[in-house]
Length: 172
Ligand SMILES: [Zn+2]
Image (cartoon, rainbow, N blue to C red; front, side):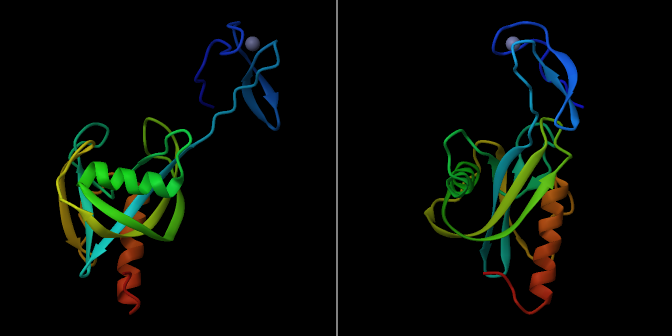
């Protein structure tokens, strides 16, 4: 169990661990229960002529490894807007968000657990330039994705794209 808080965020008293709803959770005498939930994230598969756009991570964790343009949702943000915003911030490209490719869990980010929804996307404007969390953008052939991909979920998506391409139904 992750223990994120020692003190109640409502009243400031010390939390203690008790069973609630089938799991042990930090609880407070005032009635507060701390539920730890994974963080939603959105990513984009931006395709062009059989190539897929990847970005190199500018910082830790997994610095210099490759990922799809992606990131965590902000409060009040629509998940498609998140995919569009992260792609713009990391690649300089404005994209139109298309169909969902897949939603999958991520357990290998040391910062939090994630639930990542990956959308197909196509470029509609902008000027390609790495920014924000990305130090470099590069178009990889779908059949030859980067070898050093930062996250298990993104490695899974790379495999899915290879399968789709080989099935004769190449995406986008
Ligand atoms: Zn409390």
